[in-house]
Length: 387
Image (cartoon, rainbow, N blue to C red; front, side):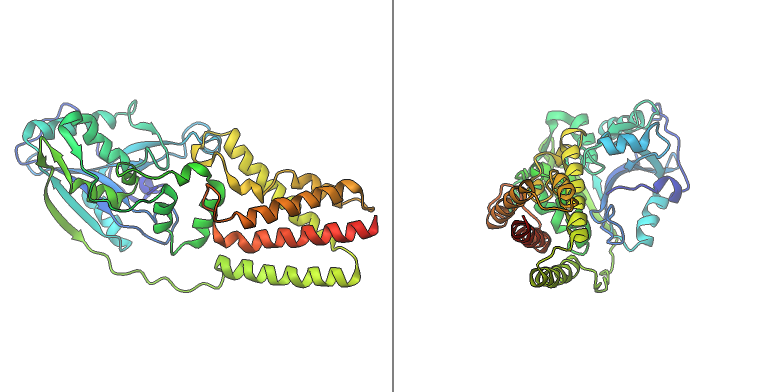
């Protein structure tokens, strides 16, 4: 969905002119490009609008998926959740061939518009492409490069256009829809599930589904303009061949499973010798505390709205930082015992409630939470014996 490198990869940019009058042979199309599993940002596909006027001699793709690294304070704004994308204007053949070169399907839906309606869409796009208007506030799920394509038609035609979502029979959340496109990217799915909280578990309306390009395409096939189907013709410009994704040993289940087994051996060793491997526990709970602090800051100190109310804070607990500091002392103390008693209760409850929490938790994390519980238990028991 995020075309970070388009400005470099697509060589021809066409300057807009809002005064241009389209000829009677002009066509406007919705373009849907398929997913590519080589990168996380490309796993969801992409949408654009094509304006083709053979009389005037131009063929343009309007792409709302561009952002500029040269924006002032780009990285600071990105961290704070102030994501600004812009409308890029490209040669459609270059745009199309870029996707085909990555074996990504390209579908075209020629929309059924009269000359006045085509001109309205074209003028809206050209106005949007002006330097003062081309930037917009990006949101992963509600204002992205695919939903903007829908919004162009919704804003131009207002009550004349009707999006009929009755063809959608599923009752999925935003997180469910995201997972459907990340089956071949388990680490990407895990990262999203850790960083983004309860807003991801909102039940999506048919209108919400259109944050995904596939559903923009499907929805336009069920959309009417002045009670007439808005799609005049569907053209399969290019159909991709199936991607061959090789097996990787570093799948989360394998990595976390091995980690759980090794920590089990370490815990048994500590129990036998009645002594903690403190460097491991300080590292473990220090890292967990830092991760929890990051998740808390994403919730309360940034504008990443989807990061709010994150139940992963139940295991990535920021106060683990103080627990790690307490473990660094040479002698056990009652505070450490009480704290890790609390961790045992919190972690056990989290595991018992794993499938009942309002937020859908990623099951790849179960071995991680098991490690937390295991080490909290051994810390409490051995600290209590050494008190």
